Image (cartoon, rainbow, N blue to C red; front, side):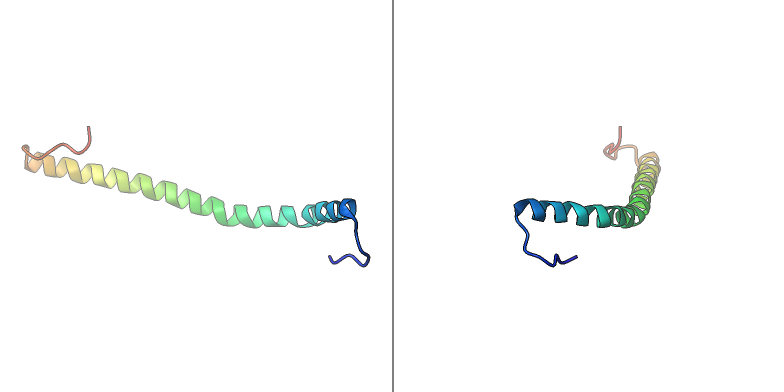
Length: 72
């Protein structure tokens, strides 16, 4: 990865593009492998928390009708 000769600005740009072409797809795959499952878990988890909290609010409002309404 280290060039064996001194490079001018065009050579630096060409080497940078070459290195990015070699390593970008690997970094993208690793990012997707770790990112997508986490996003799915967060999305499912947040939906479950909202559903559970709405269920609790309806339980408490049926017990105490004078309680403030948190969800409309």
